[in-house]
Amino acid sequence: MSWYSWCLCLYCLFLKVCSTEVDSWTIEVPSSVTGLKGSCVDIPCNFNFPGSDRKFSDYTGIWFTESNAIAYHSDTSKISAEFQHRTKLLGDLRQRNCSLNIRHLRSSDRGPFFLRIEIKDFEKYSFINDKVSVIVEDSTPEPFIFLVEKEMKAGKKVTITCSVCHSCPSDPPCLTWSHQGNVSSQSQQQTNGQWKITSSLSFIPSKLDHKTVLICTALFSGERKFMSSTPLSVTYPPDSVEVVFNSFVKEGDSVNLKCSSDCNPAARSFQWFNKSGTLLSEGHTYTLKSVKRHTEPLYCTVTNAEGQARSRLIQLNVLYPPEFKPGSSCTTEIFTVTCLCMVDSHPASDIKWWASDPSELLNSSSSEKHGSLTSVTLKGRLHSDVVHCYASNSQGNSTLTLTVPRSEALMYIAVAVSAFLVILIIGLTVWIVKCCVSRGTEQTEIRMKTEKDVSGKSDSERKFKVSIYDRSEHVYGNMALEEEQIPNPYDFVSADDDAIYANA
Image 1 (cartoon, one colour):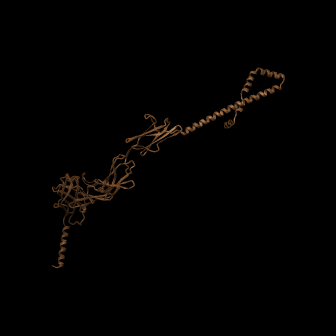
Image 2: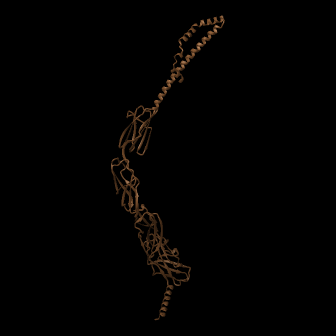
Image 3: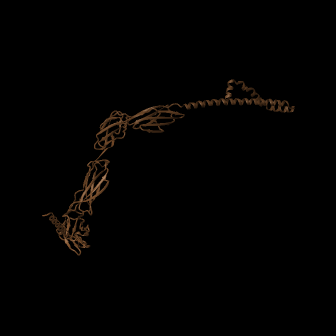
């Protein structure tokens, strides 16, 4: 047979096939679909009919069960009671889409189902040989969680997916996550009317996510819920590095220090340093012997495959008994004594004062604390040459005796007062002597003037005066006697007295 003959035969065969497809009723449906009880199921369906190039406006699609019960009809009054309000067509018959949706799926909804198409003013056809069975399941496979990286790094973005199969694309299950992040979803059609919905979660993990459980929940229509979970493993550098030790240690004792941290993977090295950065030791633990109160602060470092971190500086709490510091003393200002007692101890000391009798305590006027140093001040009048400062804490006690100095200012005041009194007495004496001398001089001048006046008068006047004098003879006699008895004060004045008068 020639090549031309072969081509002619093939062309005729193609025309026959095309004519057969166009001139016959065809349908595309799966033989079975799987649905979750209580949820919904979609039966995908597409059909064709002879003369499909012709246009019709009135189509009727009817779904029947094998027992000829009507599962769906465009006239809802014709639908069987068992399917009432539970079925609907998802597609447009004019577009050859005859997909059926069954909600609130029951165990009795197994079918099988077949489709009948009625076209007004044309033909009717039942696809009785193309039936669809529904497999109703009580549960569905759990959602599947897929981690691209089994071990995550803290601070590096990751994406995790969760997928679940279903048979109801018109009302797909809702996937939710137990972790915050950016979520996106997509749906893919599978075989036999199955679909798969996938949710992607993107986030940046941290150390807090390590060993946590990530949960993906699929919520189907009908409130059917299914969950799947997976633990997370996150690697991160050392964090929360701390030095663990006894809260208190006595001076002179030894103390064991332990370096702890939170990291993944586990730490591979530990190092110990003092405040100045000098390496002291290596290892998880470090023993410090014969602890002193002024032991320098220290810290530890931890290293793993992800990085390194260090602890804060640790100052040991060293306990020691009271110790009096230089500067503890007493001072006196006129009548007030101020005593300062400075004590270095840990824990802080209880400080008391007394003078001569320990049972008679003195009240402190003020108290200050600066770290381990406690300063207590005693201020007031003291009638003692010494005062005692007593300090005690849980580690012991000690007593310091302070001497109360004499006040120089008080001595200077006493001397000044004495000098003032001496000068005052001398001044008063001089004043009294001068007053007496002045009085004697005035009386002498009066007498001399009187005698002169008497000698110049007449006899009668003299007689009158004489009679007056006679009457007062005893008075003038006394005056004369006093004048004779009073010595001249200037007779006793010496060169030393001149100096005193000058000072006065």
